[in-house]
Amino acid sequence: MIELSFEKGEEWYLEEEFKKIKEFRETGLYSSATPIDSNGYIGIYVQEYDFDKPQGFQKNAINYFYENQEKLLNSFCNGIIEHYPKLMEIYSIEEYDEEYGFPELKSIEDVKKIIGIGNIHILDDQKDHYSYLGFECGCPWDEEHGLGVIMHKERVIDVGSADISFSGSKELRKDNGTYTEEERLKDEKWEKQIAENITRYKKEQEDIELRKSEVKNEELNKKWWQFWKG
Image (cartoon, rainbow, N blue to C red; front, side, top):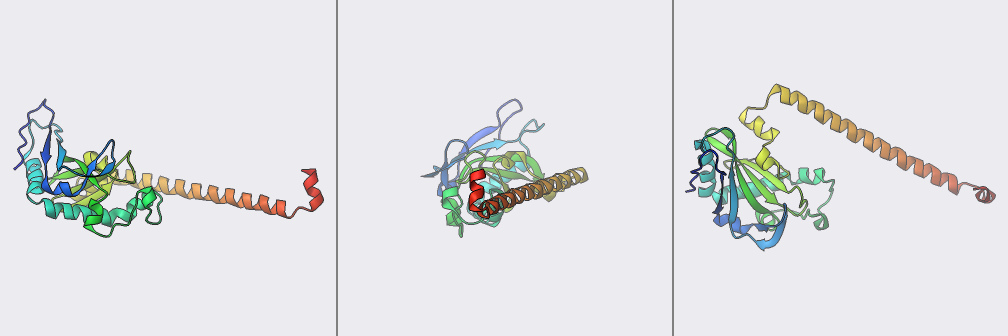
């Protein structure tokens, strides 16, 4: 059992050994994952928000993980596999490419070979008396921003860059019912703006390529004496 016996004003952090995390990679500088097997020790950060001491739902969550490591880490791996196409799309990768850090992932063991878990963040968000846990990970495709996975018990709620592991995400707030109408409208506006920007960028690139093609055809269709005129 993991004890969370912190008081307000202290740093709510400890290191703990997890047997099943030894099956993953060791994390290196920033958010990289090394080829070395993890020693099983990772950092645990407890979000204090405005609490005087760690809450019962936070203790419930980390001890549920501790007691069910294999089941939860298998779900963790399957969640990464499920979200892998979305991650590839974010990085504009269309096919598996080890050079760019995106090997094919078919199994739980494939995930363990490339992902390192550096920290677990026990968030101050909760549902049904269990906190959400944010896994801050190293990955081969982005050593700067890393990988973040949010879980509630054995369910994977969201997968993205490492910052969601300690900042939470829209998907978390949707899951526990704290996602507001104001946030929804703001997100819709933002997503619409992004889509418009992408469409505009693609059109600009198409226009550039079209102009290049036109110039090339003009050069090819010049009479031989026209080349002397410049």
